Amino acid sequence: MISASTLDFRDALPDRGRLAGLDVGTRTIGVALCDAGWTIASPAETILRAKFSVDAAKLRALVAAQLVKGLVIGLPLNLDGSDSPRTQSVRAFARNVEPFGLPILLWDERWSTQAVTRTLLDADASRARRAELVDKLAAAYILQGAIDAMI
Image 1 (tube, rainbow, N blue to C red):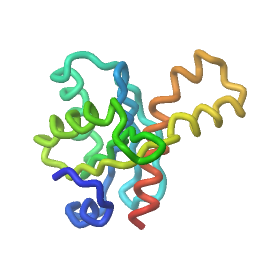
Image 2: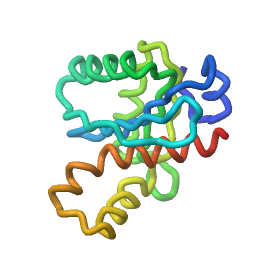
Image 3: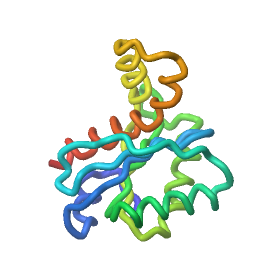
């Protein structure tokens, strides 16, 4: 089940449990996880994109190892809320991971990367360090926004 509604997503979850947040890019997938009580999202890892079958295998292994109950996928919308050029590819990605059997929430990710980048700049992180962290931190930002909306 793919939904843009936090209520529908929450209702589709069997019980509270760990959620994974995904920031799907063209070259990487940032991954974040939250605790089973939906208190805080934490960055987990950055997956370098390859063929979808390889990406899916890595995600499936992470979902199984971390006992993930649902996926929150950042949806890259334009500032006016309309679909961006990347929106269609992220929706296709969501359809492709739907066979995992987990509820999927498409969450507006506008400003997530910019907010994280600003925080890293404020922390005086080097360009290399920012590149290393930005995707998984953006995934945590996306996931935290979704869990805050569901509580």
